[in-house]
Amino acid sequence: DSPLRILLFDAWYDEHRGVLCLMQVLGGKLQPGTRLVSAASKKEYTVLSVSLMRIAQIPVDRLGPGQVGCVCLGMKAISEASIGDTFSHPSSPQPAVPGFKRPQAMVFAGLYPTLESGFGELQTAMDRFLLKDASVAVENE
Image 1: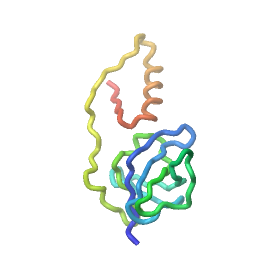
Image 2: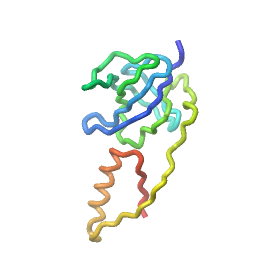
Image 3: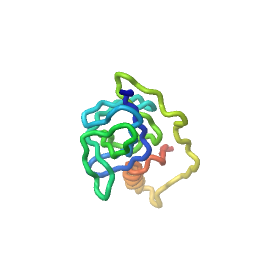
Image 4: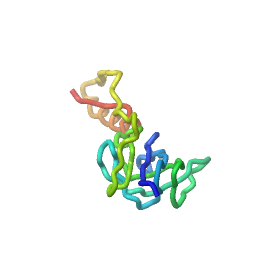
């Protein structure tokens, strides 16, 4: 058996389940209850569910080497899911898949509400937007 090694290559936010990750198992077996650690952030997660992506998601007991599935890790914000990150078992952490780099910002913009009293509403809207889009970073001035 090869050590557990998983590549995250897509993620999206679901209002009912949190962040869902599309992952490929590179080695080992992935099943609900498995503990995982991120090579990029060093955060630990527990696999809550594993399913295959068809017309509808089909829950499965496990994924093996070469299989791709939708995995729920209990992430609360899409920013926790770095595309290209490698996950492995905490007892035998694996190196990141070669070529992984943290994304770099390429476009910068300043946003201001039309009325001074609208800063709270703008912040709320941006917080909601950030839940669904990990490619956006916000810095308050």
